[in-house]
Image 1: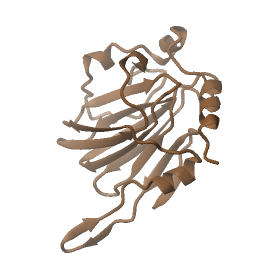
Image 2 (image 1 turned 60 degrees about the vertical axis):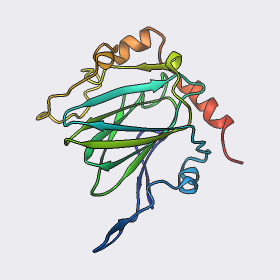
Image 3 (image 1 turned 90 degrees about the horizontal axis):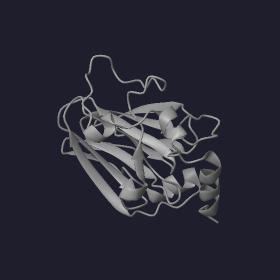
Length: 200
């Protein structure tokens, strides 16, 4: 499995080796030892999510308060999404910046996002399935989001796809509004959380 750190600290891309023959294929889409070697931290699975989306469905930007936060390992077994990670940690050197990876059924990549990062994805095809492993269970009181069409973020959504948002995501504040409202985690508290959970 190939591992590539992304531009935002705490985000990684994983590309598995696909073994194929006329019968089909086999791959290992998640390997805890590889992930933990890359991040230096354990990945304690607490919840697994599965979504099905039509073309144009835009989910996010979603995040969870730190602590405890929620790290995610995201994989697209069917269809294709443009997966976007946003640094929403106030005080981070890359605050307000993003990185994007296309996840699809061709290259079979996955991405990892540490606690404190915002996450969104746009479905590029009908009947697209996304599964993601999470280190914490869903906690409504700590769940929040920022608007995925925030002009200041200028995320790289394809111009030829009209995004379909949930009511919740459409009503989310911009990153600046979320910061003014005190919703965002700080880089310092996220770093302290990461250090407390480092592998020996």
